[in-house]
Image 1: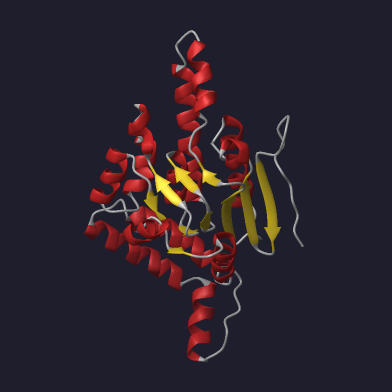
Image 2: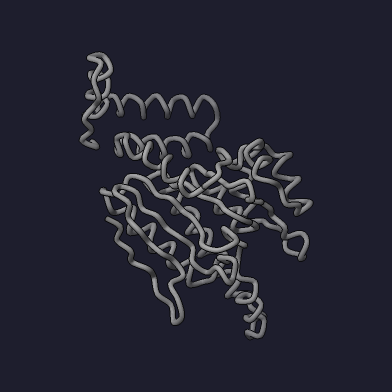
Length: 271
């Protein structure tokens, strides 16, 4: 059964929330604005991730967009309107960038894996959103770009997520040229996992597979993955050895190993 609890604005829901069993589906719903990240949408995404983090019945998350674009980045009209502020918009710009950065970090900190289902364009902060998700699937018509240089605004915050997904020269080429890359190229450089005829269906299938694992183990593994990536080699190995030792003491590790030895399916208790 699907339960839809859309976040409301004065005109339409900017974010749709659905449940498909153990999977939470979040859908950006500003199709006329190419799902640009308005202040309202950033707030609703932050709230949704906070709710999901506290909900142990959610085992995976799929993030998609309605309309012809996945996400076109920040709402430039909303930002430009604040140039008439007394400070020229500086305080508001800082607020939005901080709000967006906090939301992106909440995806990384989320116990559950997040899978982007990309159809259409993902540009600037929209490309950042894809790069921030743990996994990503895209349709053949999807395109990706960090085109800030074309409008005099280097994609500095998208750069943070992009540079942590792809090797420096690929990231720099996207950032310095602003060129769109195809879904095939995005898969080739590691920005997405794969190209599929139906991104949302493929993302949901991937989420089903992930959701069949122990949620405790996924939480431990996701946290360790991002933490060790910021360490030097020796420190990373020392940290990972400690994490794996603690993981070995968990009930689900004991159950999983026994099930493997006994050639049966494990029964997870998520602890």
